[in-house]
Image: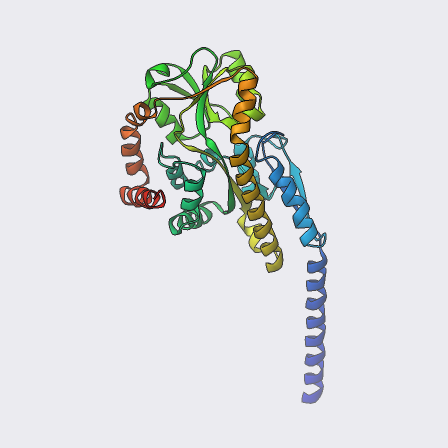
Length: 337
C-alpha cells in the first residue's frame, strides 16, 4: 500500500473518530439529568419551600434538561442517612443540620462554639468571608461534599413541659435532647445537664414518652413539628445558630456541563436567600403562633449560661487546633462590628 493511501485511510479514521465524539457529546448534552434532594423538613418550617422552588426554577432555566425530585419530611431517612446517601451518590443534594455535617468533618464544629455567633446576619457574614470559604474548601477535600449555600434559622432555645428555664441550675441533672454533635454534648454537660442525641424526626415521641425531659432546637422546629403540644415552655438561650448546610456530591457536580453547574449554584443561592429572608420575617409570627397554642416563651439569664462555657472552649481549641480556633474567633468578632 502506498504512503498516500495510508494517509488517506488515517484521515478517514480520524474523521470517523471526530464524528463519533461529536455525536456522543450531543447525546450527553441532550440527556436529561435527574437530581434527588432529600431532607427532613415538614410544611411550616421555613426550609420546606426552598427545595421546591429550586426544583421548579432549575427545570425552567435548563429547558427541562435537569429534573429535580424532592423527598421531604424524612422520606429517605434521618439526616445522617441523607449525608451518607449524598456521599454515595444515591441522592445528589441534601440540607442537613450543621451539627450532623460536623460528624463528617470536625472543623465545621467551630461554627457551633456556644454564644459565638450572635444572629442570622452575623452568621452569614462569617460564612461568606475568606475564613468561611477556607472552611468549605477543607470540608470538600475531606468529605467529597461541596457546600453550595446555607439555610439559617433562629438561634437555638430549650423547651420542656414542667418548668421555665432561667439559669443553668434549672437544667442540672436533666435529660436534654441534642442533635448528634460532640461539641453540643460538651456544651450541655458544662451546664450540668445529661445530653441525649436524638434525631429531630423522633423528638416529639421522645418528649411525650419521657425519653428526654428537655430539648435543644430552634423556634422553627418547635413550631413546625407542633412540639408545643408536649413542651409548654420555650426558653430563648441563643447559644448557637440553627442552620442547615446545602450539600451536593462534588464529583457529580463537577462532571456536569459548566452551564448546568452555573444554573444549580445560581438557583440554590436564590432559594437560600429566600429562606433566610422568610425566616427573619416570620420568626415573631411563629413565636406568636406557639404562644397562641399555650406555649410560654421567655429569655434566659444568658450571662449565667455563658459563664459556664470556658471548659468547652478550652477543649475545642485543643481538638481543632489553638491557632485555627483563635483565628476563627478573631474573624468572627471583626464581623460583629
